[in-house]
Image 1 (tube, rainbow, N blue to C red):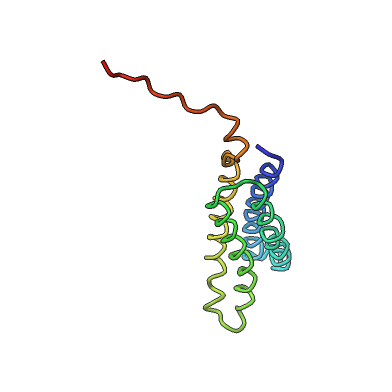
Image 2 (cartoon, rainbow, N blue to C red):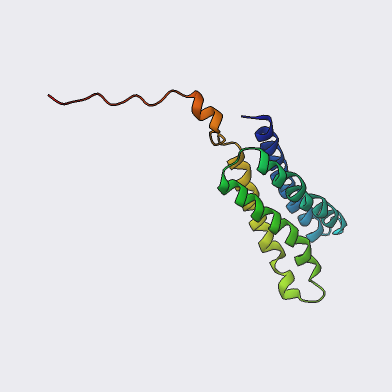
Length: 141
């Protein structure tokens, strides 16, 4: 695993942990243990991680195309999340998708984090360093 791939995996798992923490902060707000400012503030910080860190790392970490597209979907969902919450004053029906999108973000973050631990695809250099396949023995009589 390359250094870039390790960094991608680390950031992906840290982001997933941040999503779990964000749900906890929402619970604190919902049960009036605290107000919603901590949830909102942490959400803005957490939402920038996929765009500014995960997506660039996915371009250099040797992840699969599927993982890269999952990362792009995560960036879009994370960028949309605060906008959904902001819609509560104008269009509450749209704002109701905020927790639904949170579930999607969790699933995407889980998928990206798990994929980050898979072996990276072989590079051209690695392909030339491996031995060619052994031919099957001829079975003609």
